[in-house]
Figure 1: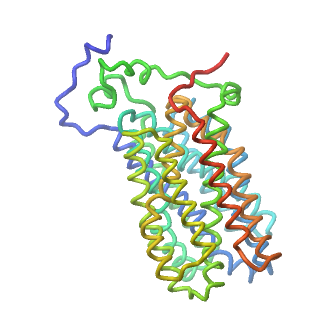
Figure 2: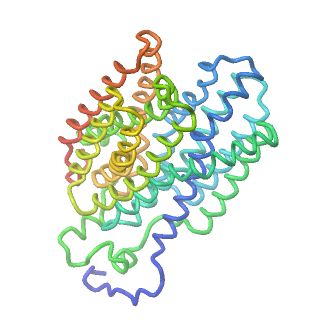
Figure 3: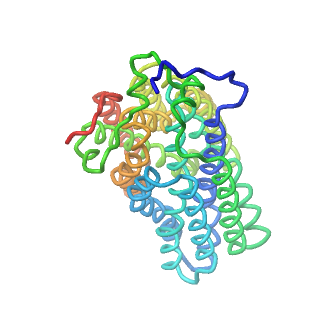
Length: 421
């Protein structure tokens, strides 16, 4: 069937792609919220029960990052090849198994095995990478907006899951809470995946939704995207530029998130006032994710990245000079809009460069280079604080990372890639 012969239906039925976005949003929100954002509530308990230092207790989050680095390339490729609803259902079951193993662990070693293995695997297979991969398939014209919505899931995971985790641990103990959260999250994701996830829209559905215009010169390219092998990805310059460019700025973000509380304490900011800074920045970042995603549909996504990088540099400069609490609160409110744009810009750059058919494989392969950057950055900032007694040198290093990230991404050419033989 020729594209020009496809007739747009009346449009009374909602586009199934938005159901995919809703299910993907919920899945990413639950997996991220149950792991990265809930982990901090386990630290005080683990230090007491197992006699760990706080540094040892933090091995858990590092183990999760290592597990994600190990599993992402394999799971990303599997998401591109196998039915996504079954991949997410199996991933959810493995995720639950990991939480049950964690809840019954009697040693730190077994807890680390549960985190690196089934929890990390399930988080990738049933969480954000799966959600972004399937969303990229269902959207072309509004891909940035759709992925921006998925990106908000990380912030929503913080808002939804941290109160549940804290309350559950307080009332039922950490082992019961961990088991209940893992199983509950898995059941919800499995139901959503089986009901709403579908692998790929038909040509008619894309045209009917306005995602592809039949007579547009780019229509055929949007519908007939190439499949990238891992070897072809590794030979492509764009892959390396996006991986390290976005990886550097994401590492800076993750490091700041983990450093905020102890840094604010050095400035005499109490926990309540510090929470306002973090909360205002989080709300602002949610707006930024949606704005950045929308802008990526209308202008060169590299320009959006340049704005994001510029505001990162300004914020890091403020961390170094510390202009005072109220000035920082205003900065978090305004600059947080740009900070939130990192994740959607990265995923849109990747989708536009490698297409939806290899999006999972590309994201998964990038984890090999990106996760070590975050792990090294997290270690370095703590080490620098221990040696110098200040975070300023570390913040200057993060600022340099962001500048390098801007330079790398500016050389990328999204949309211009075809696999090399």
